[in-house]
Image 1: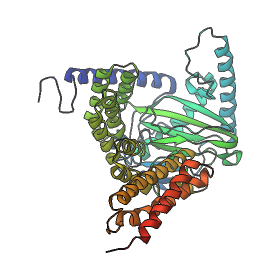
Image 2: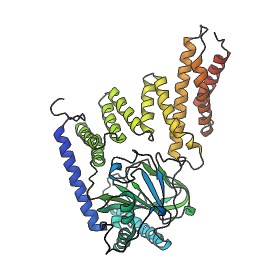
Image 3: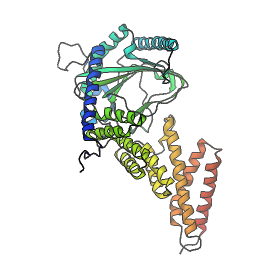
Image 4: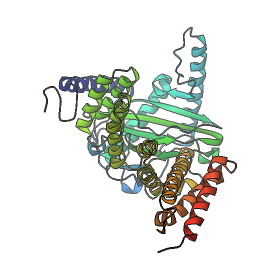
Length: 454
């Protein structure tokens, strides 16, 4: 191994240690700030505190599968599970209070935004319809801190097995129809608390999409007013769009004093390095993260992005393949890899990638209430898979046009491609490109079926 290069492929071993130190420093500052504003948890055996007790019967739980809870999953008990309280933790008056407080905070923020002489170009919290909880009035913070100490911190300690907790910030999110779905993301924390302030009767659509959620048909989780979802912040998720009404959600980001989350912080630093075109620092940051979370798909995708920028296509494809292997619930890596293979005129290899995506989706995108981005991704995968199958069938037809060999690949695979084109056309019935591919696929299949066998 060359001096100055780690086993993780870093261009600067000293840089890894510096990245770790920066993560530790940021974590210490965040925890101190959070504890000063929102307090911190007390030990569960502290009998001087009047706190709620929790047990298994108080929750419904859902799983994303062991290994899919993000880079800090192993630091938590049941880090691959999402817990939903069966009973409301906030009553209606509390929910109304926080909604009204958020409305006023957003309104005041928009007034302040208008009075500013400069604009960074990035939307503010108020412009996004968000009230950052650190900006709430003192009375609201007192009410929230009481809820944390009495109920929410004990819940997290009992369910996820972590202590010395503190919220370091959070948001009250207001969605007014029609709204857009969030992109799938991780939260910049260890644990996320999601509290529904609105009743599901107040809006249409909505809920929280959890990527890879087992036994839920890919549908968003939509909880009752005042109920809580808690989960590892590393679980990939997104707020979903509403088509009518209003939806308000209180989201709290929680960290633990003794868990620095180096991998999560290093990933953020790596993305900053790419954004500023400092690729060497970005590589070092991603390598730092991989030292703590060697199977984390977003870190491998980060290194793949850098390899692509540097023109190293094979390394980029290798990283995407690792990302798809380690986390099949995310289709981004497999789709990107498939499109790269198709561009390199390898339609069979590309088809295998698109097939893997569609095998995971299993037509969940066709269900009523399915997450709109999932619908779009599945549509793209069907069209891409159909196009690759068509290319393979065209090749087989050209190769065996004047021979008596049976076109077995076409007969085996083209019926599925035809079905995929037909499904895709349901969403866009006037799409001439897909219609022409469907017509050609039918012609090739008919020709193959009519061709005499040996």
